[in-house]
Image (tube, rainbow, N blue to C red; front, side, top):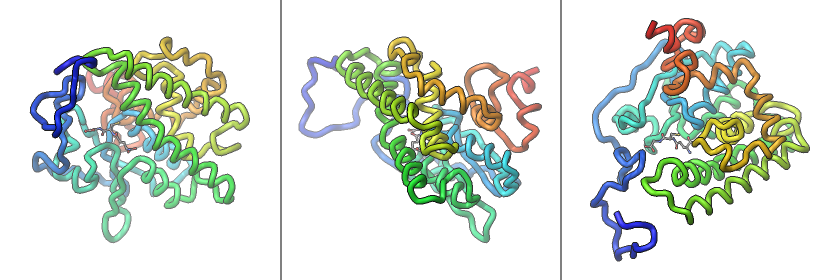
Length: 289
Ligand SMILES: N[C@@H](CCC(=O)N[C@@H](CS)C(=O)NCC(=O)O)C(=O)O
């Protein structure tokens, strides 16, 4: 690979060399399955196939909140999809998400299974199904959906842009890190100004907009992402920090963060969740012991 200053793109791009970087082994320029593999199915109405990354956590935050509200139909099996090992390219997974990315959900409560992919679509599906965490008043609903879609459009600059070049790329390229650090700090400021005037993103209530934004920008503010807290001076975004702590203290958020998590303290990792009791008995510290 040439370095960042001496590369002239050829007329036609070809896939003839590994790109380097942390995810080089799973990146491909083609879609579709690489191998045959059926997905497991558990006993609950909702089957989640995911990993405890910020995109995956959005959905488990929602499911745990729904269960805390007493929605029995939100009982779920959470199966672990190890994206570093290419599990998102198995035929069963591709059948429920042709985009080969976690999270993906199958609702098996009706006469035929319904697949839902894209975390924002999953949050909206669950909010509509259970009538919860999506305001019904037209103005507040518009505010909620605006922040939900803001997250969908903004987080790729944080993850695929800043996070990739700051933490994962094979070389530290000043131009790329500068460009995305600038954008991420601007995004943090957007959130900080909104959260100066409103308790939650859509207003007075906790909604799917907060559930989508918190794992990314709350995580960044709390220093959980990319080891970049000092570099981005995240403590300066006081309102984002206030909101991140508020959500982080919710029991359902604490549980949601543990599901399908494969790093951090063993007691915080619940690789798969098939029962509410698993949070007590199936975390990695208990399984290894
Ligand atoms: N826009 C998608 C993004 C999902 C996404 O990027 N998932 C990542 C993990 S956080 C993934 O599965 N990556 C595997 C791959 O790219 O092969 C969503 O919100 O659901």
